[in-house]
Structures are given as C-alpha cells and as structure tokens.
Amino acid sequence: MRVRLAAISALVLVSAGCGLSSGQPESVADKETLVIGVKQDQPGLGLRKGSKYEGFDVDVAAYVAGKLGVQNVRYVTAPSAKRESMLQAGTVDLIFASYSVTPERKTKVDFAGPYYVAHQDTLIRSSDTTIHNVRDLRGKKLCEVAGSNSWRRVKEERKVAVNLVAGASYSDCIDQLREKTVDAVSTDDLILAGFAGQDDSIKIINAPFTDERYGVGVKKGDVAGCEAVNKAITEMYQDGTAEKLLKKWFGPTGLKVTLSVPQFEGCG
Ligand code: GLU
Image (cartoon, rainbow, N blue to C red):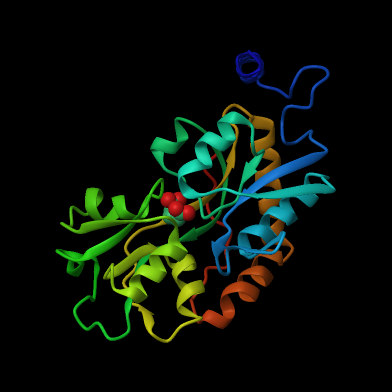
C-alpha cells in the first residue's frame, strides 16, 4: 500500500512538473539523509574496506550529496542485478555503481548524468596470445555477471558466439580468470583498470568497443532530484573536482581518462 501511494504521489508530481507536495520530502533534492548504493568489490570505483567504501563512484556520490546539502550519507552495496529493484523499492535513494544508462533500464529508473563515459574492453591472462579484439572471444569462456550489461554487448549486440560462465561479481570473474575457469572478462575499462593495476598475470587487450554512460540511478519520476544531481555534476567538472578524482583513482593505472563533462541524458 505504501508503495502504491508513493507511486501515485510520484505520478502526481511528474504531471504537476514541479517539486513534491507538502510534508514528506520524497525527492532526493529535499532529503536530509541519503542512502546511496555503490559497488563493494571494484577497486578504484567502489570497494568496501571494513564498514567504509572507497573509489571514484563513492567520491562522486559524496560530492553530489554535499551539493544537495546532505550531511548524512549511508552507503550500501548495490550488486549489478539489484540496482533497479533497490531504487524501485526505495532501499536506496541514489545509485553510483558503474551503472550504464540503457534504454531497458530507463523503463524502470531515471538517470541523472552521465558523470563519466567509460568504454568496454577485455581482460585476459597475460600469457594468452589469442585474443586481440572482441571477435576473438568466439568460442572462448566469457564471464557473465547477472544484471550487468557487459556480456550482452558481446553476445547479443556483437553476436559473438561466446560460452558464458556465471560469475557472482566482477571480482569473482577476475578470480575465475586466474583460475582458468574463464578465458576473458569483458566490461568497462574503469573496472578492468582497477583490477589489472594490481596484478601482472592479467592484462587489458586495449580494444575498446562501446560507450558506457555512467548514470546516477534516481527513482523513476523524481525529476527535481535528477536535475539537482545534474547541477552538482556540472559543478564537479567546473570546479576541477572531476579531474582531481579521475587522476586520483585512475592516474596510477595508466588508463587514459576523459576530463570533459559528458553530454547529459536530460531528466524526465
Ligand atoms: N556498466 C555496465 C553495466 O552497468 C557493467 C558494469 C556493472 O555491471 O556494474 O551493466
């Protein structure tokens, strides 16, 4: 019932084209505390250390929350397969978790940003001399993370006949690559750079083949919230914070990062 009421009030809001009606702060633009979903096992992006999370996504989230005037932020883990449902259920207010904007996801959630455009690339064992581009993945064992878009880019969009092997998360896929239960892990360069930087036995083939527009997941219909987040992202690029954070987290990996503000999706 509460969910239904919330859905109705969200609809009223959208049709009114303005902020939320009296009383309950529903939009993330009005909240005093925020629960933010991030990854917990992706070095450089979202990595859990004890009770804390660190990485580029976490720093961007903290910056945006600060610009929204929120002092109190709680981070929780948002695995790839749970991002839409966590936003829909209200378990989280926002998601910053290597979350690509896709048409399918846009039917369930809204996206502010993107705050960065990553590119899908492929990670293999350093000893492997047979894989140079996405086509070479034909007949190879490719790690598949549920709810992630990356395996679809290879198998469904590029129609490369890979053998998919399930991985619980990208860190699990990297373990499987080392253990040889998979031959390749194909996903965003930002994710791969974080892992490759730690280990000489694996390497990125450096053959990027997609644009992955990293959006901020917002509950469907929260146009005011989405616009407030976009304003914060614009400021993050204007005041030099984006450059600082990209260099902080990815400079040491050698990955070439883009320092200009991406073209926004637009809210609502
Ligand atoms: N950016 C891709 C996606 O949103 C892959 C990374 C991930 O699953 O977090 O599906």
